[in-house]
Image (cartoon, rainbow over all chains, first blue to last red; front, side, top):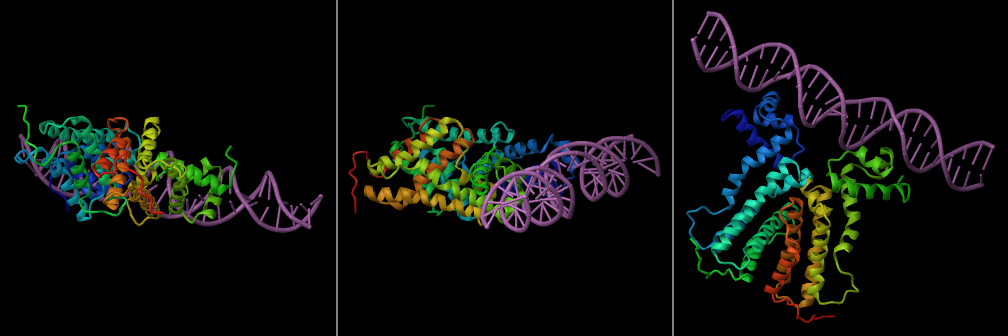
Length: 196
Length: 196
DNA sequence: AGGGTTGGAAACCGATCTGTTTCCATGACT
DNA sequence: AGTCATGGAAACAGATCGGTTTCCAACCCT
């Protein structure tokens, strides 16, 4: 029985997992059953299924981000902090239970870019790009704006490969991100140029 | 009325479009209505909706490929032929009616990698990788296998950006692919080393 | 013109969808 | 102990799902 935490938390947790595993077309009945919450309660806590989609995606954002990003206690150079994201992603893919980035998958399934869930997905991608951008500025990269977008693109490309189960060379994301950083002059030996 | 071509062709055409635009969860009724074909005929021509998904995806593969790949009459160096794929993709994205790679979207929605539609998607991605590989071998690249996969990954990453409507720098795919080719020594000035 | 095949329109099946409602068991507060 | 709010179980509504079947109009060939 899943009777810990509040009904709202249980719903967000179950929704986050089931929407990702089975797609956003999973029924509300199955969702509520998994959460141990009645439909009545669900519709008191959320206006609609669409709102639950968006809120569950948003609620899992921080933990997903924490899983990928290096913490502030990691004081290695920006280049290593950036590559950490791709290393962690590769680990998830290697574990075999990686179903693609939940935000991208949800946006793909929803189709409508105005859907609240698509908006959340877009914001999450922006957060990732912003992280890359901050680190690239620290590293003194020449065009951090473009490079940050390129890195995000590689991240999503690596996700897509996992989804279609394309032949996977382990570490292809790290390898490609590193190649781009090299090309941009953000080398391993580069000193972090703090502007603080 | 859509009464040209055979019912089978009309179905494949409508299915290819509607599955892509509305997702694979669109109903068989809507599909048949769009194709001007009865459900009875549909189920005489295809064993199930799942088979129709796979066959419509497969049937649109060649034209999608022709849209992206340079033809054999394009005798420019391999590097240019490779970049053509990304240029054409950028054009599609810029037109605004780009909903992501149909193969990746379908695989994302189906979840099950054993689904016949997912198998078709995987094969399509392999074809793209194979094209890159052939060109890279022609260009004498050092590690064509890895680089071909990296290019495919960039292709899918660029698709994902379009789907989530992330901030789009025009030509980010071309730019990134070119950077990778540069890093691998497949330069614009490189002479094609035909092994024929 | 007449016989036979093709294929569309639509009813039908049971299951499931989102969302609402009713009913009742439980637990907290006084 | 008695009142009251919380929330789960489940029936319900109307629509739609994938898939099957019936019926009939339109065409083919001789």
